[in-house]
Amino acid sequence: MNFQRYTRPVRKVSHKPVMLGTFILASVLVSLAILTHQVFRNFKSVEEELFRLKQEQKASNNQNEQKHAIRKRTPSENLGSQNLTSQGTTYIRWGRRDCPNKDGTQLVYEGYAGGSFYSHVGGGSDFLCLHSDPTYTPGRYIGGVQGPAYVYGVEYRDSSARYRLFDLSLIEERVLQYQGVPCAVCFVRSPSKLMIPSRETCPDGWTIEYTGYIMTGGYKDTKHSSSHICVDKRPQVILGTQGNQYSNLCQIKMKFQRYTRPIRKVSHKPVMLGTFILASVLVSLAILTHQIFRNFKSVEEELFRLKQEQKVNNNQKEQKHAIKKRTPSENLGSPDLTNVGTTYIRWGRRDCPNKDGTQLVYEGYAGGSYYSHVGGGSDFLCLHSDPTYTPGRYIDGVQGPAYVYGVEYRDPSARYGLFDLSLIEEGALQYQGVPCAVCFVSSPSKLMIPSRETCPDGWTIEYTGYIMTGGYADTKHSSSHICVDDTPQANLGTQGSQSGAYLYVSEIRCGHNVPCEPYVSGREMTCVVCSYL
Image 1 (cartoon, rainbow, N blue to C red):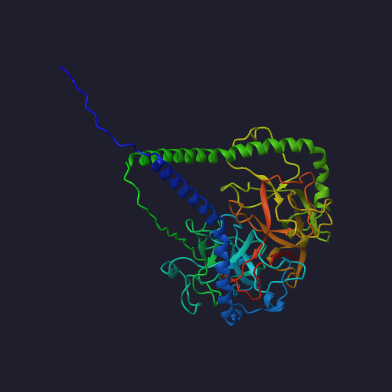
Image 2 (cartoon, rainbow, N blue to C red):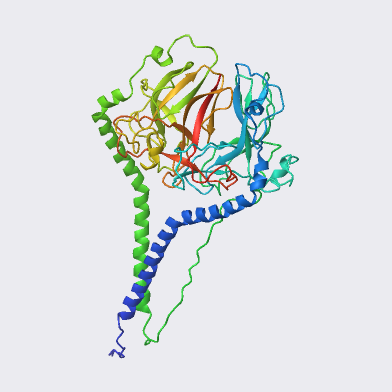
């Protein structure tokens, strides 16, 4: 059998459509990537600025109503007319502007619940009770918004059905959702206080102060972890804050117009082939990038650990002089301490205030979670300067997955002009390690008040400072708010960025359930630690 091969002429196909289609697709993808990056960088600042303008306008309209929301009390009204005994403690009554009407319990101050913005990944994890009458001393703040740590007001967010569990008789509108949360700091003539979750009665020998519900941020809409607080089951609200005061998320829509021009008919197979090849390359690059991103943190941590171990060895002698080891008798001073007292941490210092009744327990280094870790601890620790390692109580090497790193000051140098740097040899605070001291005071109670520099009548100042926490953008987990001394010290031998945990000065953002009178948006938050004597 003879086979004859038949052929037919085919027209010559130009490769220009393939190149053109590939170029157009690549251009669109690159443009989308650049645009997405720019939107991501600018989204938060635009969101906050729009919300700030809206809230300032709303705050001015409700100014008179806000003044009636929390009535200012005189010092005698705050602490009552009775003479307090030498024993007592304080607690925060969340959701109320007053303290229980019972013997032995008196109001220290009333205010507004404050915390981090719901969509911020970093920032503070604990809720603060902001004083209703903040102090702003000239030279103790910088006008405008610097960031990167902010404090906002707090609002009730549960559905209306959930709030039927509460007694709303003290709320005129009988609506709790989307309203601001007040708070009250109460002094009780008792040596101790206790909050018990999932119980409505106290153990024998204890007295009920108030009952309520455990509340915290939502696991979906809130992008950071928050502390659990006990909110009074018969709550009050901050007047003039009704309605959702969280910022609205804006969707950016892009409109594309398609331009065409007549071209000769060609086969689509080369275009499809070029598109398939380009898509395959992009997918491969995406997978590779994802793998690199997953492995980057572990490599970064290992390099950082090796670098730090080498630096610690080189600076060992200098570090010994940075924190002088004290004997137990030196730490606690006179061994005959009174049987009534409490402790507090003086952040940013290696010593305790030079005053009667206050003595050093130990000094050390501030510790916390690595700034880029999503999980880990949210609170800061005061690590002892002389740790103990008992054989059999540790395993050498890095096992993970939970670590504690040193803490460093991270604000720009301009912000640190607010601090008295006379105790720092270099005169620079940025990128230096943060020390700490645990102090014992012969007082039955201590108290930290945000946005104030003075203590109520009957209380004594231990130290003043600034509220600091992790940044909302670069710190990938929430951190607790701490009061750092305004005449700080630094850990010697730690100058220069060493990463670890970060600390920034916090600013108030009024309008978010915190009134813009007397609070001023963008001003740094001062603090005072008080003891009752």
